[in-house]
Amino acid sequence: MKRRDVGTLILHLAMILGALITLAPLLWMVAASFMPVGEANSFPPRLWPSSPTLAHYRYLFARLDLARSFLNSAMIAVLATVLSVLINSMAGYGFAKLPFPGRERLFRGLSAALVIPAQVGMLPLFLMLREMGLINTYAGVLVPYAASVYGIFLVRQYTLGLPDELLDAARVDGAGELRVFRTVALPVIRPILVTLAAFTFLSAWNDFMWPLIILSDSARYTLPVALAGLVGEHVQDTELMMAGSVITTLPALLAFLFFQRTYVRGITAGSVKG
Amino acid sequence: MTRTLRARQERAAWVFLGPALGLIAVFFLLPILAGLLLSLTDFDIYAISDPQSARFVGLRNYQQLLGGSEFWQALRNTLYFVGVGGPLTVAVSLGAALLLSAPRLRLRSLFRTIYFAPVVTTLVAVAIVWRYLYHPHYGLLNYWLGAIGLGPIDWLGDPRWAMPGIILLAVWKGFGYNMLIFVAGLQSIPEERYEAAAVDGASAWQRFRAVTLPGLGPVFLFIAVTTMIGYFQLFAEPYVMTQGGPLGATRSLVLFMYEEGFRWWRLGTAAAIAVLLLLITLVATLIQLRLQAGRR
Image 1 (cartoon, one colour):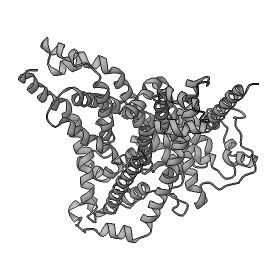
Image 2 (cartoon, chains in turn green, blue; image 1 turned 135 degrees about the horizontal axis):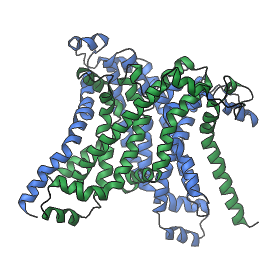
Image 3 (cartoon, chains in turn yellow, orange; image 1 turned 30 degrees about the vertical axis):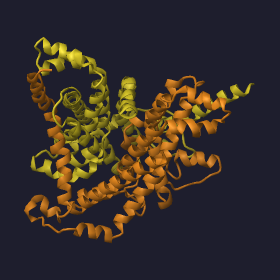
Image 4 (cartoon, chains in turn blue, orange; image 1 turned 90 degrees about the vertical axis):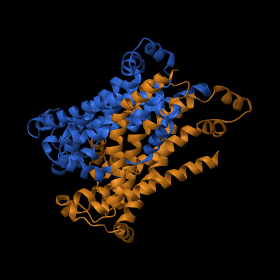
């Protein structure tokens, strides 16, 4: 074998080893979720269920009402996505294509806010929403997702590449600014809006700390909050907890596989070009 | 462009920007300013029902935090996580990106998808999974370590190993994100520079030092800063896996803030922790920017 072939072989072996290590926790999670009670806590550890069972999934839905948390999560993630795309697309377009005095300074100021950890404002925000009666409501959970500096940033960068002549042509035809946006700009910037949608959906679905703070009634819990609560009571029930983890994380993984290309574009657009 | 059109666009701009700016001002910037004020009060569980009972106490919350040991322990834990977990994540990301960019690699997009998958998983769910993987008797990790003659390690039960355990999870969960950014950065380095270095007889390592690293400059800075800021916010992993234990070895600043604020309802103290976290993050970011600017 030539030296070059050996190098190629080692490269692929390293990549496969890395892939196995990366997938192992997820594969074990799925396998353990189908194991009969106690089998995940055996020695030596089992990698495959001896007789696969759906009992844990059934228990989660029938007795622990995880379906409700699933619906809560789905509703919050969908609403967050709709709001975020609507509000941030308009703002991002405004920053890119509608000149007004002080625009660049305002945008730079906003971008600087990306450095501030969201947790810093969480306590006062909790107290504010409490005064507004939004504690333990879906609206309270949604508040931080509706407008995001990152979302505005993403849409602005993409929209800058849109030729002004296209917009001016529509203006000459007498279209108002909202119509120019809707009929001319929106179709062209759609790819970045899909990216923004995928981003918002996944972060709203996976988010933990804010829903944990704002939701007090277990009937309103999102999946991550419900799951973290289950650990307390069911920490010994490994197989049950793995089934709960599968239910929580599978929709996020599927959404990613579906939107993979556009999601990946969002990550690189926000960094290399920015 | 005519003056009326300019005026029209200016008016329209505020319609387009209004909702987003209003929401950000009220629900993001205002709370941060309010947090500064809150940290100067003794706002506690009684003030929740009667906000009038909260009193201005000046810097007392800060004095108590800085005078006690809990804050310093949480800061040490957080710096441990940021200082070790951050560089480790960046190193693994860069390594994976280099392998993934190798011209001779087959099935590139499959590998990319697999390596990226942990990024989109739900942190709470995978933290629970890893909690079981770390089980000292039944966990897969110790079993495999035993197979090569290591351990057993009481990962989450031993104060010395709990934070390394959380760091491993964070690296696994996070490296795919930076990997993708590195891959894009690698693609932007002109091929000619590698060829020129090869002509000069540079080894692979020399080419990496002389061409790849300088070529990645701005990307490296972006990744270093965003990873660091993100890691300062460590919360869900210790919340789910260790509850800050054992012996407080994994209580991060944000977990400390959460416990003070939402378990004991000492919101004044918790707000002071949040302000200190903000200051520390800002200072660390400035230091990073300085260091990297000096290097180039």
